[in-house]
Length: 430
Figure 1 (cartoon, one colour):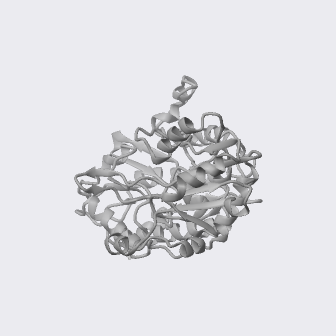
Figure 2 (cartoon, rainbow, N blue to C red):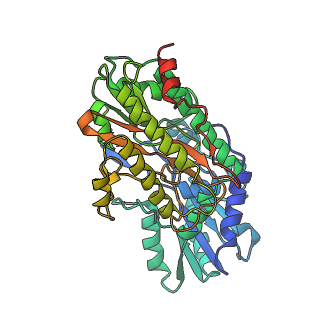
Figure 3 (cartoon, helix red, strand yellow):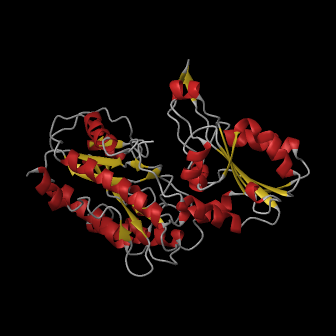
């Protein structure tokens, strides 16, 4: 891994918090992700299953974690199963975790090789009455591929039909949404790397550059700062491309007078950052562009102040909609008749701002968090309003990542990334 070692106390604490919420006499199993094929002998780069990483820190494929707080033998209350490493594997693939190194990473003392799993799992299943399965119940999930976790669940239900089944996901949704200080430090590092990328781009952009060249500048800066790369597919959208919300082709030339909407973020140690900035190709906003830009920035600032403990996500978005409606009226994009005659299910402002304002962020860019429960201290949210005007040939989105505090406004992890229009112009023309 490119990132610095993470203090294993984080994973020890995460497991402890999870096991506190398990039913009596139950065990839970977590699987790593597969390495997914492309064709021939080509594969996608491996990315660890976030729940397994959250509970163990193990960042290699073909890994399993078993938690059994009421196990007869104390050594079986936390167990890792790993691929056995040897000289042949070390030569062809690089060294895998040894049992000793796995303990350093995870804080788990009992480590077996995967070939021993079936035997030990059978022994422990005879002691428990409930097994927790780990399913993906994120509100945006749309998974067509059968995962390693899916195969394990199917096999276990067939082999142990008399056991009760329970869900890990509701526990993890709540635990993962509230960040530990170590996690916040990792997310700050991801945001700091994103900051370096953005400042590099501000000094690079000029008329005639291509969107993919800007993407390359970010990637260069991310990699040289121990990031694996982008936390999600980057958007570098110049001119009217910005009005396609998930524009990812990044293959057009940037023209004088256009704006470039960039929705990019570095990952670090599997943790995400998520930034949106909109800059002028020529280094100067037009009067109209700056007017819209400042309106978006004001909505972002005002929306951020609402992210406090106890806020409900759904009510928050209703209030942000009111802020945006006011901004669009001031900009002449809506009139009072538009608002008076609007469809409550699709308010008038949605014509120019059609996506949500905030989502949880953490190990996943759209991280776990139960949306109908009140916001809590140390949850991390994006704040990303936008105004998209195809008729005028530009769209603007601005986005920061913020941490909810006990009192006062959220703490902005992107506080050092330039965002004021005048500051961006000053840097681009220095």
